[in-house]
Length: 242
Image (cartoon, rainbow, N blue to C red; front, side, top):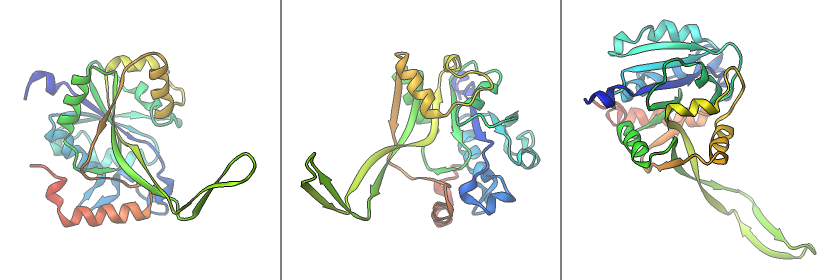
């Protein structure tokens, strides 16, 4: 492992309440929801270690003490884990400003993503692009289960589509940043990722997209969680590199 690679850090956004997964998340923070024999966050941490990441900061808020108790200092996983407290909700990107020592390229991820993405390849792509930020994206099809009618200004029907579907590139909740992105994230202010990205684009910064065609599921709701659990149990080795 090169010294350059070893400097890569990761920030895991783990302070949310996970309300869409209630009632499970009234007891567990979402990153501790089990997938097979592991909490989803432990699967992600093992993937980070395989990519050469040894230092991870968890931004914690809701039920954060449970994550501290479970992961402690990370030595069980052969990593160094520390914590940044989110005293008040700061959105999806605001908590990054509370993380100290981000002096080199760093990975940011949600704490509830199941994917077989190669993180080392994502980081390498980001550096090749010479971007301030890279967003990992995945194609999703959205189907409208109704007949869609299009009218002109005179309310005359000009088109009728039965249950149309649209393909979108969606964020996977995985990002790679250069440290100067912190100039765009005010400390202790609420800021979501879409607002941060639009702020970067408006400032003329290069934001790159990495299109990933492998497996990705987030634990957004009970159906997603059940699907991710079933997929993991079919082939755990796909998600747990040796």
